[in-house]
Amino acid sequence: MCHLFAHQPQRDYESQTRSLRIGGHCTSIRLEMAFWDTLEEIAAKESMSLGKFLTTLYNEVLDHHGEVNNFASLLRCSCLIYRSRSVAPVREFKAVVAPILDAAE
Image 1 (cartoon, rainbow, N blue to C red):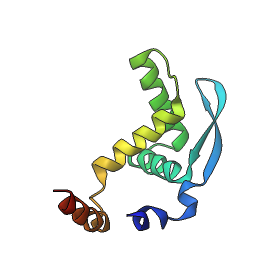
Image 2: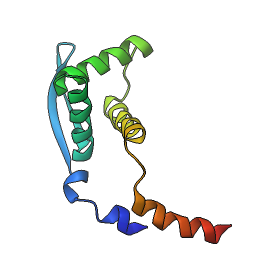
Image 3: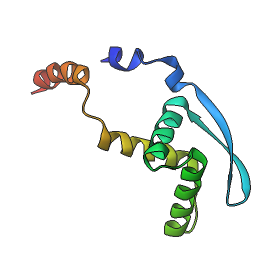
Image 4: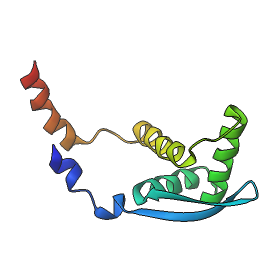
């Protein structure tokens, strides 16, 4: 199973800090490149710049919960939800998991 995860490009898990302005305040967010790529993809699907998308998401969370405790974690979870709903299962993963599940039964 490690081959599936260990062979991913190193760029995907290198982190990058980006500065942005939300609600008139400057802030910075540090995320792994795979998350930045996903956020850029979501923003493009919404016909927004990344900055506009992040500001919109921040404001929606603020309206819904009254505060935003950990925006970076919210962004990571949002990316996971987006990917889980938009990407088909990876065949290699099924091939690796199936024998393990059969052996456990």
